[in-house]
Amino acid sequence: MLIHNMNTARTKVIMKFPTYYDKIAKIKLFDPLADILGSSEDGTFEFSFADAVRFAGHGCPTVGGAYLMTYFGLKALYQEEVPTRGMIEVQMNQAKDQGTTGVIASVVGSIVGASDEGGFKGLGGQFYRNNLIKFSQNFLGSLKLVRIDTREHIIMEYNPHLISGDPMTGILLEKILQNVATAEDKQMFSAIWNRRLEAIMVNEFFNPKLITAKK
Image 1 (cartoon, one colour):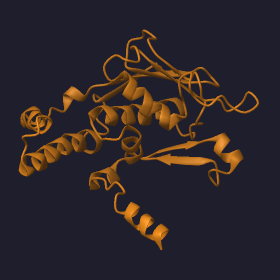
Image 2 (spheres, rainbow, N blue to C red):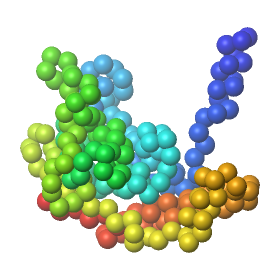
Image 3 (cartoon, rainbow, N blue to C red):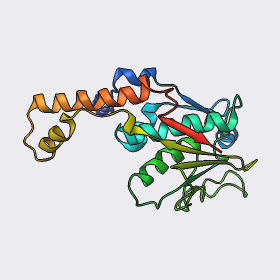
Image 4 (tube, rainbow, N blue to C red):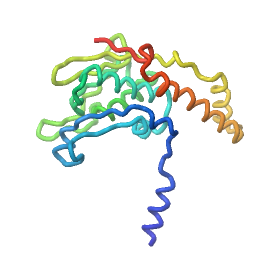
C-alpha cells in the first residue's frame, strides 16, 4: 500500500507542458546501440521539444534554438535518410563556458548521442559517445554538425533577435527574482515568455532567416 501511495504521489508531479509543444516537429534518429541492446524495438528514437526541455530543465529561446538547429542541421546532412545517432560530431564555435554555448551543446548532444570526454566510451571500440562534442573550433557560425561516416558537415546559425520579446519581460523577471512579484505578475510573465517561445518554435519554425545553414 505504501509503494502504491508513493507512486500515486509521483504521478502528480509529472511535468505538464504548454499545449503548443505538441505542434513542434519531432526529430527521429536510428541508434545502433539501442538496437543491439533492445532498448528500442527497431533501434529508433523520436525526440520532441518537450524532451529538450526535460534535458535542460526549462524552455527558453536558447533551448529552442538548439532544438531547431539540430532539426534543420540533420535534415541538411541526411536529407531523406534517418540520421544515425552516435555518428554525429558536434562542434561549437565558442568556449564551453562562454555565453549559452554549454547549454546548446548539452541539448544538441543529448539528441544526437554526443558527449565530451566524460561520455560513454563504447563497447569493443564501437558505439562510443565520448569526445564527440568539441568547443572553441573557430568557425563562422554557432554550431557545426559533422557526419562521422562521410565527414560531411553543416554549419548552423540561430537568429532569435528576429522575434522580439515583450518589453515587460525584464521588468517582471526582476520582480520575480527579488521575491516581490504577485501571483498576477508571475502569471503574466509566464504568458509573455511562452508567447515569444511559441512564436519561435511554431509560428516562425520554417522562417529561413531564423535558422540558416551553410556548408
